[in-house]
Image (cartoon, rainbow, N blue to C red):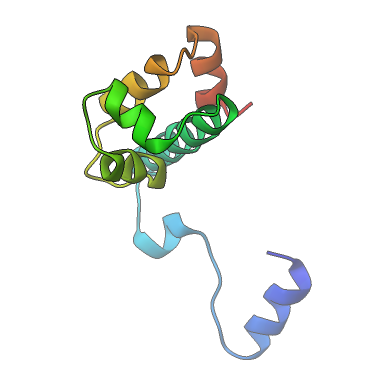
Length: 104
């Protein structure tokens, strides 16, 4: 958030902070959520760059399109294992997977 916007909100009595502060997350919980979101975003980016639809990915994994949509949205019901398997199903290399996790 821009500093000018933060100042205007503070002047009107609003409190700003991070999601970690708002939800009272530990450093480990915050890291876990960030990892999940990076993998979800990486999955969507990789799928789109390969020109694969959610339906096609779902069929290759013997899953459903709605499950793929949940994976890409970072739904908490989706395991990290499934996110990684999906990325590997799209041909993601270990090096590319590491780059997704590192946020590069």
